[in-house]
Length: 60
Image 1 (cartoon, helix red, strand yellow):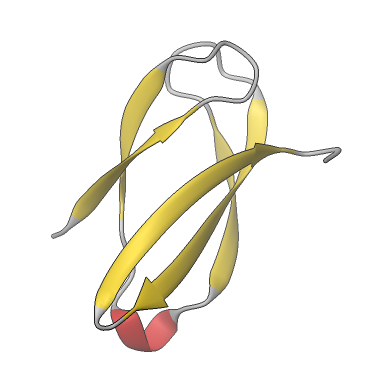
Image 2: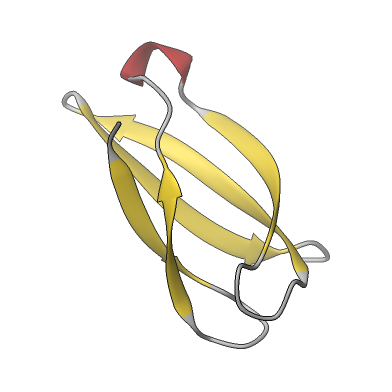
């Protein structure tokens, strides 16, 4: 399983999230920070076969 690192938009701590398959992107997933437990949205995108994750706050 591939993983990518995201940074929590609330506590600014980094942690790893599992990546979906390239064919399942783009997508967004509700996710709770593994450090502070605050909710966020993790967006997954694909570029030339590589999947990337970016976290943003719920209200952004």
